[in-house]
Image 1 (cartoon, rainbow, N blue to C red):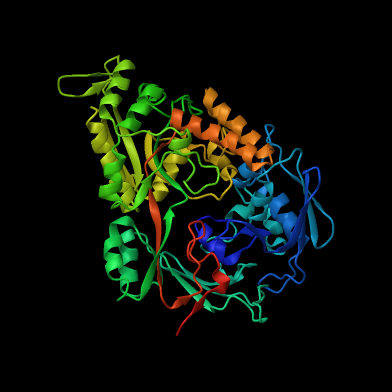
Image 2 (tube, rainbow, N blue to C red):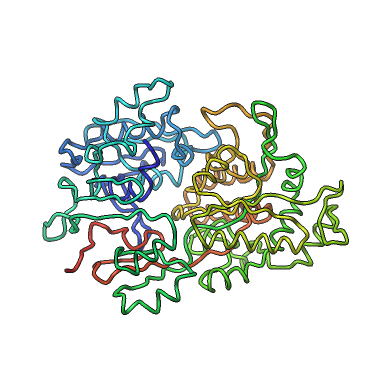
Length: 538
């Protein structure tokens, strides 16, 4: 489907999976499935659907839709999707097999025990087979499956069939989406009243942080993710503006800078990264010197207004598998003297002007890419530029719109990038698309991807392969205490090798109008994870 329309927040309104993660407890709860059971040998997983489920057009939702969603979409080799990364099992990367038992029951089978499987499978949206099946079997004039262009921005929103609490009523490009209650949604409250309670939801599409802030302050929005730079103002106006700012602690994602470690060439024999620059980036001492050369405390104070934590792991501090510096994780305190020593020992040298060059006399200069839409991220990039200038490096900022940044990342045409990953859930395996060598989001050393021209001379380091093995071992082990050993080792390697230099993790702050009732704010699900329970006071 056209991703320009179906972003994650849109899916949350329109679609549900078999299970979901409770926003407060992070425990799994039944959704479209009323129950599930795991075989004694841990190789088979059976779901039983609720009776009477329907799509928003009134058609029955059955096990056939589950089979279609997985076999013809998520596991279809002709449909590029990061979902395959989280469904791959073990060292072989085998994918699960499915069997439909009857109209209510489906069985998944894996070749070996796979701890994340229940959570990963259960959370994927179930799609309507009666609407989309033809598009997965037919090709357009370019030989691509029609599914890839189905339900795009030119589709009549009312023809988009859903199973979630809402359906799409209208879409105005670049302005707003309007959702109305799905009359066939399955949930009812304890008194038997249909849920959700809110009849219509209008979501405004506002590109800039400043624009969102202005709209919220003027009363046009009922909810606003509070950025650190606007927190003081928002807090002062909290009572008068009739809203509450919820604080769920540090965000569950990560913010970082990363260097392009890819040493491959494109199909024309041209290197993705200048070989001179690539030699710097692939030098561990260089990356560690950069890490020690960034003043993250200053970044936390000046850019994030002291509202956040320094991040020293790929996992957030609330993750049950998090390895803190106190328990063996590696942290990089600001230490420019150590940075200079690391660089000098690695053969870099500084001239009388303070300019840094490598041992062959090449001035250390590279481009730092950042998206323009997030003010704090641009400010962080500017500070990185300033801090590294103190080490003699020349860093050129490239500030582009997010779509342009994404194209550069996908084409491997970049050198250094200030980025962020959203929270992926409690299980570290949800980030396997980032960390596995074959992962579709293995940005720092992106390998060959399906459907693209071949690349030449792609090299994978031993430590990348070690992380691969740890992820496979962690997924194979079902005891969380034993799994933690593997995920702690992965964090130690990641922090030692620094494919990502983590920065500051801001607090998760969300302003919600007082008229929105039944809000149960959580760091993983935000204010609206229990959307079906919310009410609006008059």
